Image (cartoon, rainbow over all chains, first blue to last red; front, side, top):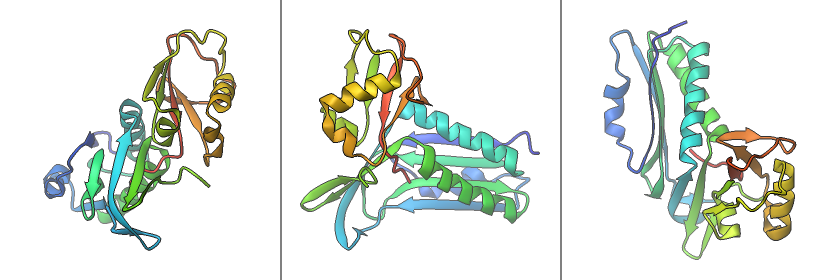
Length: 142
Length: 79
C-alpha cells in the first residue's frame, strides 16, 4: 500500500473549487477524481433560500482524518482532499469537496465515492435549510 | 464538565455551551441523557441523539469525569 499519501483536510468558510486540481495534482498520478457537493435550490419542491452549516470542529477534523486513514489502507492513492464549508451558503455555492489522485483511475473513483458517503454518515457537521417561511435542521426528526 | 450543544440540540436547549461542574451526581452518559431528556423533552423527538466524550462517540454506559468535554450529537447532515 502507498505509505506517502498526502492529505488536505479543512473546515473553511469559503471553498475555492478552482484550486482543487493543483491541490490533488501529483507526478505519480494519472487520475484525479473529485466530488463537489453544492446548495440545491429546492427540497421536496420547497424553495430553499440558503443553507447554514455548523461543525463540532475538533471532532469533525478528527473524523475526517480517520476517513483518510481508512482510505489509505484500502487504496493506492497519492493525495486526498476533504474540505467542508461552515456558515451560510447560497444556492449553487459549493459546500463540500472531496477527491483523490492515484496512478490509475479505479482507485481514485472508488476512494472518492467512499469519501463522500462516509463523510455524510460520520462527520459531526449539521445543515439547516432555510425556506421563505421556515427553517429546518436536516434529518433531525424521523 | 463542559457540555456542548450542536445543531437542533442548541436550538432546543437555547445554549451553545454549559459549564456543568455542579453535576457531580452524573456518573454516566445514560444518566446525563435522562437528565437532559427530563429537562428538555423535545430532545426525545429526535431521530437519534448520540453523545461524545472528549470528541469520541460514547455509549450510555460510559463514565463521565468532571473535566470531560461532553457534546450532544444529533443526526449529522453534512455534505
